[in-house]
Picture 1: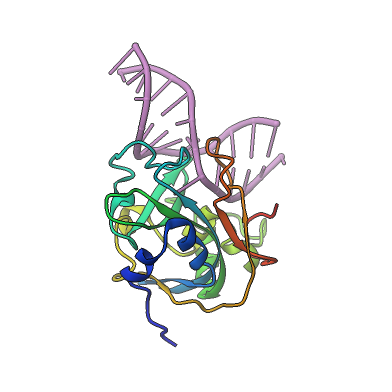
Picture 2 (picture 1 turned 180 degrees about the vertical axis):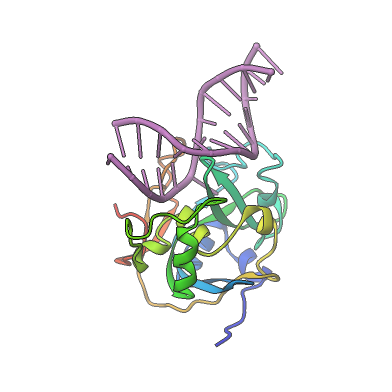
Length: 208
DNA sequence: AGGATGATATTA
DNA sequence: AATATCATCCTA
């Protein structure tokens, strides 16, 4: 059952765009106190040093500091006041680059994922009958997958994938075709084709 | 199409 | 200190 976890050498081995592609087909795992959840990475985006869309573009601030850590560091940030995004830091230390994980194909702990998706922070559970979240919808999008996986910035930011409760296993899926396209939800650097996903995979957030 | 929601970076 | 800006998601 245990396939082991990818270590620093894997994350450092490729440049950021290539790592974004190599991570496709690998399994992201969170072994949490509430239970284990996991999913195959099916969609990623690369954010580079000289990339206007990157948090590390022309600056090194407290928020983006984890991006300057060694490859395999976890970088989590808050977006739009409500959602969090999960990144795998890449390249050498002191070079601020990372790969955003945008969608997962759930493999384990789907019941727990479903429960987490329903919980509104600090409040009650969302009206149940109103919306039924399908397996396809559980992790289809960067904010969704972070919530379904029980990942929190306050707890997991700046941890490393080579140790700790969150890790990535070697590829489970192989032989698929990778599509590259423009990145989603940005206003600058829009022309850079640094989004990658598994062709025809239903769990990818959005097609183009 | 528009609103939720808060940290962050930038300007003053 | 004030403000514009978000690597998003949900509801209408």
